[in-house]
Structure formats: structure tokens, C-alpha cells
Length: 481
Image 1 (cartoon, rainbow, N blue to C red):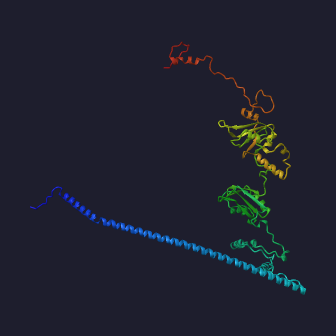
Image 2: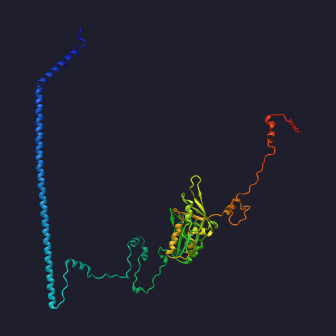
Image 3: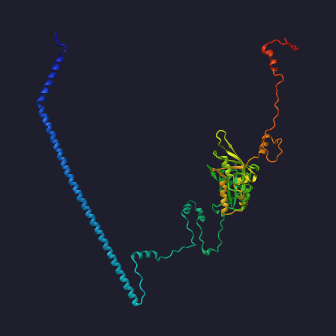
């Protein structure tokens, strides 16, 4: 049988606890025996560290003191050296000034001696000697070089741009390089170049309209001077086809050499070109264009020709903050104002942007639109110079109200508005002359479409409603079987 060691419960734990207690007691005894020595050693170490720190601080303090003293000595030395340098500079300047004064005195003495000798010998005194700087300047000014000779008759040399162009197009030599104008050849007949030889406009030109957007200068040239037309292409000097976004604008300008070529081109008007009938006109023909305004009136928002003249002035493009007083004070220059009517919103009371001004006569309305007072109306056509310009600027200002350009035109008379509204019938009972104000028109009496017996409708339908028995009316009803 094998032997097995049986341990009592809790035996191992007790042994471990006894060992730990024995170790703790041994450590305590060792500390108690060496405790005094350790504390003495620690105190000695701290004292040595303190002494070393004090020594270092003393040494650093001594070194700082020595450095400060050395710095003060260095500053003193630098100040002394600066003073010495200044004194030396002052001495040098003084010696230079003395030398210059001595040299001037010597020069003056020499000049006086030379003048005296010249006077004794009967000669003219020599000119003052010049300083080297003056002589050098004079040499530059009075340089005895030969004058430049320019040959006026020589041909004008071509520019750099012309030379670059000649490299690409040698055939343009006679145009870019001008011949010499020698006096000997002045009597020889000069070659006459037409005005259209360059890119300048010619006297003989046409305008072509209604072109196709695909038209090109080559197509135009073939149309005007092709085989069918009978005109050579040399007659055409310039074709200007304005382009926009890569295609032509639908018209072109063509210049010719002679007037006969224009007549030939005008005969081709209304003919087909690319499927469209082109319109050809003389470039100087302005017959169907609107004539330019000849009056000196400034450009304003007044329209005198839209409505027939009346005593009412319509004013538009007003600010929302405009009031009737603004209109009255603005148009007082034209004449007496009877009434100002301003269209306003019901909720806010602000201006809707337009209004009406009633004057005493039609001439005042015209003056208000032209921006003239009664006195200026008599003399504005005869003014010239500064007076005319001053009146012109004043009329422009009168066409602006609260910073906005206003629109003006004749307002409609009340009688005209009445005719438009009621079909041209005049009001009854108003024989007075002048504008007629619209009044209440006479209404027709209202007819009652109901019968006299108001309950007849209900009595007719009483049988259907209530199912009551009623008397017979003598009518017989039969039903087909």
C-alpha cells in the first residue's frame, strides 16, 4: 500500500503566519540597531549640500560685481574714443577751410596781377579762368560736331509693322513703301491713287439688307460681280459684313470704284440671293429714315402728341411718398393751378405712382410739359450761348420730381371720358358750354314680373303638395290603353 501524507486542516496557514511574524520581528530589531546611524548620516549630507549652495551663491555674486565694474569701465572707454574722434574731425574741417581760404586769396592775387600787367602792356584783360567743372559743362554744351543732314527727298523708311506685313505679302510693296518725292521729278506726272485704294470708305457705296445668316463676302462678290451680272470683280473695293456670334447680322456694306457700278448694283435690288430677296440701297440715301429732331428741347418724358390738348396734365412715374403739395409746388412755374388729384391706395393712403393737375388753360399745360415759364416761352427760341445752355439745364431739372424723371401728357377731358363710357350720348339737362361733368343717368322703373295674386303660385301646386280634394274645372283627362 502506498503511503499518503494526510495534512490537518488549517495547518499550512498557521505555519505561514508564524514565519511572517518571525521575519517582521527580525526586521524591526535590525532597524532599531541601525536607526541612529542612518539619521546622523542623513543630517551630515544635508549640511554639506547647504554649504555648497552658499559657496556657489557667493562666487556668482562676486562674478556679477566684477562684470558690472568691467562694463562701466568699457563704457567709459568708448565715450573717450568717441570724443577723440569728434575732435579729430573738427580739426580736419578747420584745416580744410583754412587751406581753401588761402587758395582763394592766392587766386585773387594772381588774377589782379595779371590784370595790372595787361593794362600796362595795353592789352585786354584775359577772361576769368574757369573751374574744371564749368569747363566740362561748357564742352558738352558747345560741342562743335557737324550738324545732322536730313534728306527730305529720300523715301520714308517702312515701319516694323510694315516690314512684318511685307514678309507675308510681298505684293503689297507699292502700297506700303512710298516713292521718293524728289524735286527733280516734281514735274513728272504723279500716279493718281483712288480714294478706295486703302481700307478707307469710298464715295460710291451701297447697303444690302435681308441677307441670309449664312452669307459670306465671297457669296456677295459673286452675286454683284459674277458672270451673270456683267461687272468685273475689280470694281469692288471693300465688303464690310458685320458679324455677331459667329454669323452675319443680315446686312452688309459694299464700296465700288465708280458710280456706274452703283447703278448696276441698284438694279439687282429685289433679286434672289440664297433664296431670299435682298434689298439694295445707296449708302447715302436717307430718304426713309426718320428725320432728326430740329428743336432744342431737352429729352424729357413729355409727350405732346399722344392726346388732344386739354386743361388737365397727367403726371406719371411718381414716388409712393409723393403728395399733392409736391405736385402743386413743382408745377407752379407754368401757371395757376385749380386742382391736384393724386391716385392713392385705400389702405395706406400712399401715392399709386400717377396723378392729375388741372390748370386754368391749355397753354399752361403745354408750358408745364416743356418746362418753361410764361416769360421764358416768349424768348427761349431767340436765346444763344450761355443763356441757352442755362435754360436747357433748368428745363431738365423741371422734368425731375423727387429724384425721378416724370412722364407727362395731356389728360383726357371729362366730356371725352363720358362719351367713351356711355357710347357718345350727351348728358340730359345740361346745356352749359364747356366740359360736362358726368352725372347720374336716369334709371328706368323696375318692372315686377310677379302676378297680382302673390299666393297664386302656391295655390296651383296645392294638390300636389297636400293631396287635398278640389273641385273639378270641367276638363276631362283620358289615358290611352
